[in-house]
Length: 100
Image (tube, rainbow, N blue to C red; front, side, top):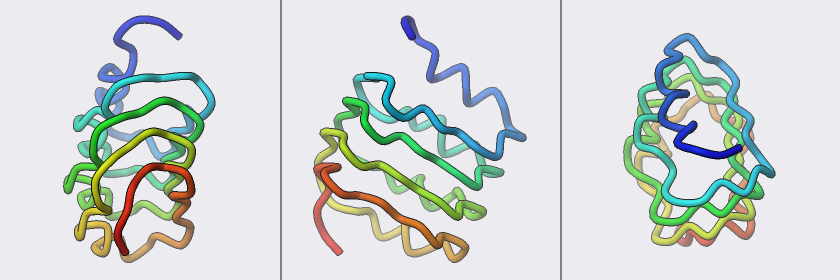
């Protein structure tokens, strides 16, 4: 995919599954993704996302599956991840994030 496609996805407030793994996306994870509060699944693995994972991830309260593996993120896992009470699958291997 080419162009600035990712911000357009935030205009889909009823979206429940976003799986854009293995697409060679680069740059930061758009903070507008944190407005997709109906998401159940967020798979962003096997891309080239950089930067930190924002604390806004905690607003995705319905999220059950999060995969950020195989990216080049940096920084620590935000504390707000603990607010995701429905999260049952969390994959951060080779994501670049650290912490517990």
